[in-house]
Length: 277
Image 1 (cartoon, rainbow, N blue to C red):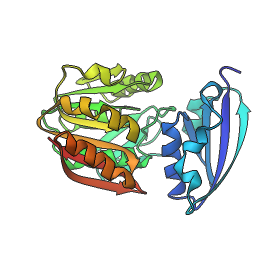
Image 2 (image 1 turned 30 degrees about the vertical axis):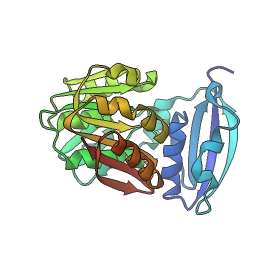
Image 3 (image 1 turned 45 degrees about the vertical axis):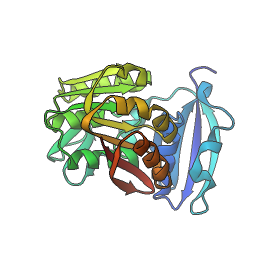
Image 4 (image 1 turned 135 degrees about the vertical axis):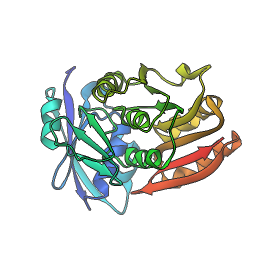
């Protein structure tokens, strides 16, 4: 029935990093909310978005290093705010940046991002978002024009703004992410961040000093030429949303487009790579 969800209960052994990797993979496939349990993860996807072979695309389910079993059940529409408030926990990255909900006390870090933790992807708990935040903390964003492509909840755009960016464009193809990013940008008083709904077609004629793209391997490889065309000379491109074993393919594609590999960060086999033009 339209409006209903499939609820998947995954039991995971070992729980970490299995839980984190599974959440990240499911998020890219359209699962909209996650509840972390003592022995695994409960994940939700709209009935109309689910296809029977969808889980065949989840790499960790085929892993020999992690044992995962699951059950599926159809349920009525969930009160996501209530579920998130029960299960969302604040996060602190490198003792400098904290991400919390409005109902959490301040962590009093150098950078504090307050979000409304609905079902959008990119709360900071996922390895790829965590890694991109680490890159932002390490690099200079002062007076730079920045693009956050596939912005999710908008946390990367918000942090770029907090780090002194001149202007930040946050773009996501998903309407829910677009709406949630608008709310979070306003909540964090980031007047120089513009949020748009769409894809790489919006970038024609635009130029940025820094581009952040945390999406997935196939979309990144497809849209790389557009990103590079939108990057200023001496600009920096940060990519995430793929595994360490994918770095060689991403690096080859970027170098063929004239970019130079700088470094990459790794967390639980997920990576975020920095390139320069």
